[in-house]
Image 1 (tube, helix red, strand yellow):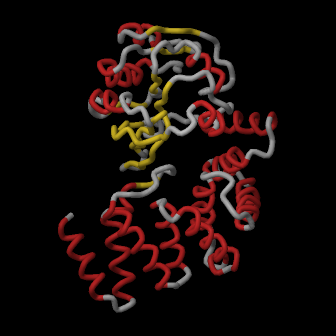
Image 2 (cartoon, one colour):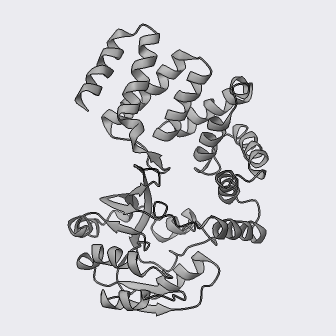
Image 3 (tube, helix red, strand yellow):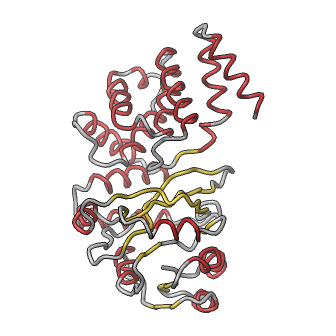
Length: 341
């Protein structure tokens, strides 16, 4: 689904066109050459006015799909190399209903974040999006459509530069999230997203909303949404020197370990928080966990994280804490790692 994306759209479609049976593009009112570019890349082009909801637009697209499988790309995403081999293997696995793409999200400050995102699935009438923005297909729908089947990583990287190019969609997305919560209140996912977007836009409402969500979360037995991982990271990162030693931080760190101990970005934040608290043994625990995740290359990519935290940044941090605690074996190991970089 596109609007005024002629330049990036061609890059996106060219990266996938030789690996798929059909490309379908929905234009929502472009003033540039997006429609012509899509057609020149062999796409079947649909047109409609912007409906004010991403899920409405994407569901209109899904109603038009004629193949057995769907793979979704946004116009600011592209395959770094041909996904043909990965796709051919994926569609032959009868035990899988869908796949996650591995995303490299280029940052405006340089470097990139990594995460995996559900973007490929067997077509089924129940597989439809919900939500005005940051839309998703509900787990209940997936379970009803494909009982007993599983999801896996596709094993193909997709690049994304929507933030690096300077495009600012914050105001639009904030409006859509507020609209979503007005229509369907008490959605933990969207409440967390709203708090995080308030924070990113320096809105003074962020602090109170983040505090409220954190207080509710630490008193629950299970996370209401995985986006709580981002909320915990924001809360710990923003804590002042006085706040970082409060009992509530203890409870947040405990829940973060319990729920998100396989998320590199969360564990890194725990480590830096424990350093601020001058709790070196617990900082060491966090950095050793990161070393374990980096070595095994087996960690949860559901939440974006800067990949540098599993490289030199980790070895510097772990080496420093180990040296402070007299763990020369670990410090020397980290020095050898740094010399290999």
